[in-house]
Amino acid sequence: MLKLKVELCRHLPEHEAELVLLHVFRTMHPHLKSFSDLKILQPISTPEIRLTALEIARARENGVPLQHLIGVQFFFEHEYAVNASTLVPRPETEVLVQEALNYLREKKAERAFTIAELGIGSGVIIGEILSHFKNARAHASEVSPGALDLARRNLLGILGKDFEQRIEFHTPPDASVGFEIFLNAAPFDLIVSNPPYLSTTDEISPEVTHHEPHLALFPVHSGKHENPNYFYENFLTHARKILASDGVVFFEIPNNRAEVLRERFLKSGFRDTRLIPDLTGRPRVLQARF
Image (cartoon, rainbow, N blue to C red; front, side):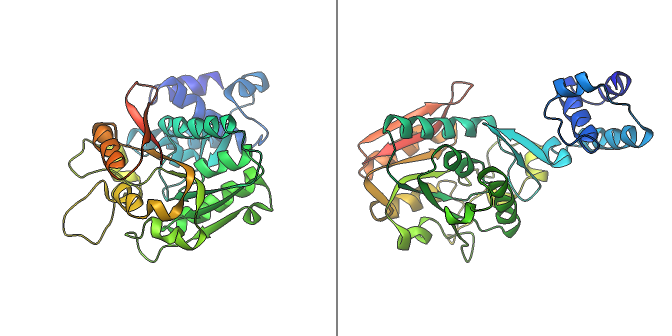
């Protein structure tokens, strides 16, 4: 195994080489959870395993996200299945989840409460919140059939076979439909979302633009001009109808437009707003209450 790791490190950074090794050996030993487990077990590398590992390494060298190649990503407290249908879960989104959980704990959310999420993606945000609060019920929208299938698979693994009793899924007729899809189920105590917010003029790595779904990156709307703030503005249009008077919203936001978005929320009647930094110190989450 050590020899194969050295070979992989000629193509990949060491931490990625370790993830590839863990992935290929888990086909024989599904109980493996970490590279440390793999080192303890010291399994024998076969020619087939070596070939598979090197194929993954070469695809990674060509820019394919590692998570798409190994099919999983650890996020917050659970391992999630990932594929090309959804964004790869990122550490900055863990900030949104942590802040939402902190808020709920401070509120001592012991009574039943409701959550809405626009764009469930792979299910990481709603999955983590529901796993911590058994009394929560949720509504989630998703326009991509592939993403919705993946979210169902992940929620089944994390919440168990009865997960659909705790969450109702909404499928928009097109990608321009926003928070209006929740009007009939409103109001909600908590709204969370990492919506599409990129602009085509933003600096984006080729790995992202070539391999991640554009529906999850760039807002699609009915206007003539690009509007990367489309879903934030859509929320503000419906906020009074879908958010409970004592409710709270957590949005992941682009750091380069954070203050602009905060000002728009203030002008729309939100009097309690907070910008929360990510691990690099840049504003990444907007918390707002009426």
